[in-house]
Length: 320
Length: 295
Image 1 (cartoon, helix red, strand yellow):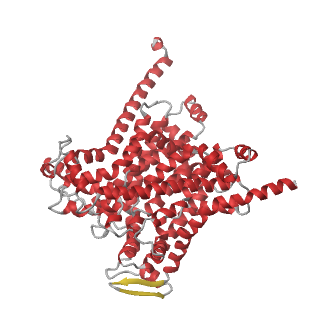
Image 2: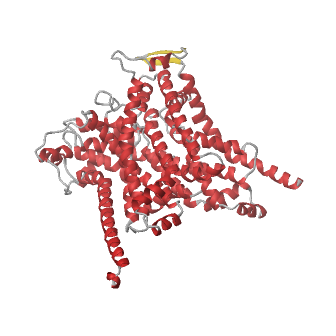
Image 3: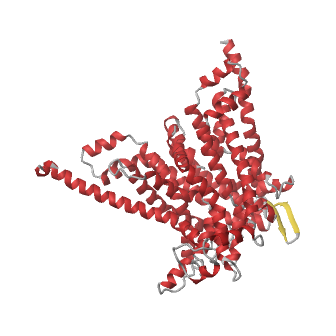
């Protein structure tokens, strides 16, 4: 007993040694910056031209400014949250439908699809392509002199100003997000379906259940935890939407700020006017929304013993 | 086939018909999805083979002979952005990031898995909780800190933080749990190996599949990252590819721009990752699923 104890004590210091680099770097590069972001949100601290204003403590003034209607009566942070959510939804709905369909097709024992590796490789590829390049490519393809408009005019149509229309601009952003993520979601859902006890499907087919019945009565209910996980992590990812609309609209959220996302709003304050106060306040808002959503993920996956396995099962990849 | 007359056989036959229809529809859908995924890349490649005049003249799906010409222009023209420089910059950052992320995540996961120490549970739960925090929300404090310690416009703020990557840690932890028996560590101890050596020489090689997957993902994530580098890097010659690509916008809108060159530059920015993916796609796709299935 005593020797065992001594043994574990003598090795325990190695545990600390192995995890110290991670924690030191995390504390300096993420935790302290996070806390100082919160701290900054209570200060007036920005640059106006060449003059530095602040830092002066102003309490909740930045938050009040954030939620005060501007001259035209709009509360911008609400507008930008709505933009972000609309563009997320426009991409996420087809993404889920496509991914579910594909996951079912790939895992179906009856269909026995050939060339699965090829299809999976192809649909996952857009996920690895630089979002900035994707955005710039679509900006070129859909520009007024781009190939899409060339096709339209060749067919006798009139030039469509894709980036001048609210819904065409939002639609293109959403489409890029859809294209980049449906392959990833498909693979996650496939793993979920393959995790379902195969004997259930066999039993159902012996009982003469149709594939539609099997889907709604077996696959979908048993896939629910993973589906919830996929949806919420996608929502958290959606809240961070930045690269694509930033590059397509050069950061101004054209047309008329209808493609401006929350993080673009944050970035505008942070990169141009170095307004640490206002950008700090926006960060806090995003942090709170993300925190609530993450709680839902952890809850739905069940952080207790029974659900622990499930959490671990899926959490690993999704957060990449 | 012989039992066509039996009622059961008829059922099989209509079932077979249904199955064939289902298969045909599935393949049509898969074909559609394939076209959807590849069409924009196809246009990119085709357009990178055409000259500016050809691009303005009209749209085609057939490649032209201007590929080399566009390549040389895009590679040598540094008036707006310098692609070779951007590739080098991005490579330095992405490669360092990939190595640090995987090595230290494996090390942290190993430390928590193999040793018993006070606060181990807390350390694990802490990482699990912070995993969901987006990098963007601490950007304000991070940019301020970087400016204060004089590291603005250097690569350090883009490389060092990768040592602490909660999601990669989590992946490694799962992999270690399932494929590194503690007996191996104990056997090494009996043989007189020191703990650090055991990790580097015995444990790490056993984690190769997980490391390979994470090196790729970390490299790609860093190569494609736009948000943080855009806040840290100011000088033109230090810019990474995503920053450079974002500058092409003015070129597309200007009358004097060369569209063939623009397409080629976009192609050059994504091609390294695409080539690596084509060779390792099987492992990568499996790796994505691995994270989801393991447990």
